[in-house]
Image 1: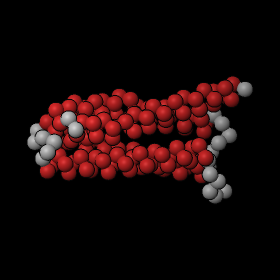
Image 2: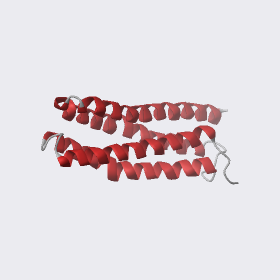
Image 3: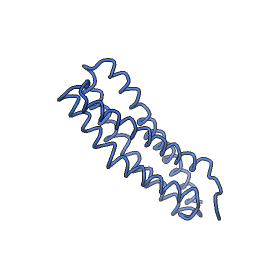
Length: 156
């Protein structure tokens, strides 16, 4: 009985964290689109996105991993369950893309926006890279969400 209650609390936290993390990520594109129409606000906006990413989205993703793993450990679920194993693989790919691609790109975008400016060839190339990486990350997270909610039976 106590493990069932713990599982439900963890599940609630897990869902809440997913809403927070993905919700924050989805807003980045809208903020960037608005800021490109007002170049004076671009640096401020990019720094705001970096702050949201560092202080809200990324910690939420970290706690998602903790709550997800804990749910498996306190339940009759297994890491070998297809939707769990695929989600974990996609999660680690997401972390890799974010850590190696998106975060350094965003950092460089801020530097270029404040340096050579938002109209420079370097900034535009970095913005394009950030946009592509952002789309890849959202697709990965939406795929994880699909597996977590639908729980398709793929092999057994």
